[in-house]
Image (cartoon, rainbow over all chains, first blue to last red):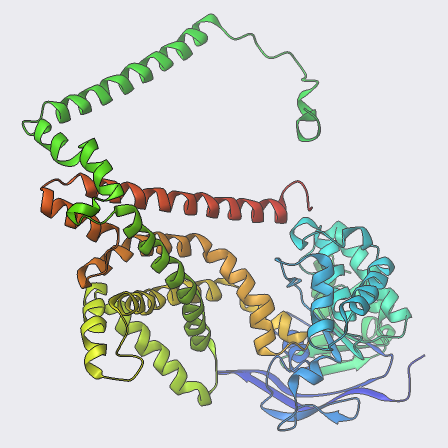
Amino acid sequence: MIGNGEALRMEKVHKSFDATHVLRGIDLSVAEHEVICLIGASGSGKSTLLRCVNLLEDIDAGRIVVEGEEITAEGVDVNRIRRHIGIVFQSFNLFPHMTVMRNITLAPIKALKMSAADAEAGATELLERFGLVDKRDEFPDRLSGGQQQRLAIVRALAMKPDIMLLDEVTSALDPELVAEVLNVIRELAAGGMTMVIATHEMGFARDIANRVCFLDDGVILEEGPPAQIFTEPREERTKQFLQSIIEAGRM
Amino acid sequence: MTGPRAWVEEPLEPPPPKERGSRLLGNRAFLVSSVSTIVFFAVLTLVVVLAPGFRAVGAQFFSFRAMKASFFGVPEAGLPPIWRGFLLNVEVFMVAEVLILILALLIAVIRQIPGPVFFPFRMVAIVYTDLFRGTPLLLVIFMFTYGIPALQIQGLSTQGPVVYGGAALVLSYSAYVSEVYRAGIESVHASQMMAARSLGLTRWQSLRYVILPQAIRRVIPPLLNDFVSLQKDTALLAVVGPIEAVRAAGIYSSLRFNFSPYVVAAFLFILLTIPLARFTDHLIERDRRRRAGGGAR
């Protein structure tokens, strides 16, 4: 199911915020239709990595290539690049002053210059697929957390991205709402969406990932198929991390 | 009595009957508050009425004849009607308000533009705001009305005092209002800009469709407050000549030695500001209901 083409490649990516060196040389290659889960402690650089791929953060060194184009090159139109890369945040970041429908259609209409009718037709299709069609005229404040996060995923999908970046999308949700969001992600994976997912849900990562990357202190310390990472990790730090997760009852 | 109140339909045990004593207490509280209110206003009225100059003030400030005459004007005596002067206040206010809303927003947005190329623009916006916020409005009106004609710039130097005074109002208030806008823009969380940009919207599109609509909604009450203030400050134009409400009242009172016209002018200004306040309340309430309340229609 994983394609031969390369969707994303990061080469020796470095990123610092003032004195903190958050990414210390990230090398990562993601094939088309591949699902990668990034695991690691808070502050290990998972979110920063995803934000760099979406050009929400400038990188200090290295390069990032998406679908064969170096997006970190000088003079690249960031808006054009971002239209192909969807990102969903932990805190939803929906537009509170717009209806569900308008949240979804804003970017297709303004950034892709789609007609309102086409954008709404596409949005309706997505809303039907993710069980939100009866909420189309509601405002985000009136949806549950799970519905809000599903809407955020739909909003990103409406741009028809080549790759989706999910940044701890279930961390802000009540436990009983986590499943509905994870099911949406499972469906995307089944549909062949290329995804890079930062997550604390180890069971979910084990189910869905083609490959799991353990980030520690700004580098990918260990990567491999979930069966290997979760059952026989090679690195001492990975073992410690997984042990602490098990002790916290999160696995 | 459906929906949210359904839970009271079957209480576990009947509520205890209200005791006679507590009802008496309720009656007593009502009685006390009534007596207290009556006494308070009676004393206040007595203080005013028994003041040594009460009759003189009544004749000087609340003469119905003078009010009526000044409101409608006395053409044969050269006394301009206050109502017509007040129309000029309203006109200046309406035009100034629209210009202020636009100019202030422009300045607030300019101050937000990042990047070294725009440094001079940001600089101009900051200096402008500091300058006009720091100068008393009265001085700005004087300087514009007497200074600009002296510059002898074609087209610009041949306007009337209403235009110069109005321009002074616009520039002075825009400096204030731009700060109100800016506070609103900064109150919208940075994650909103990030979400908009992540979808491929340009910085301008994000500002236009995501940030500003939220920012402006939040600052409607303080904006209104500034506009109530602006409505009253149109009276300052009186110092450079145009016959607006306060000037019309002033002409009457100086010729007939009666201050009642000022009360008329004051009353007109109050009449103008109250509907604006109620309208804003209505807008805020509607927005609140639509986003969180019962129906999303």
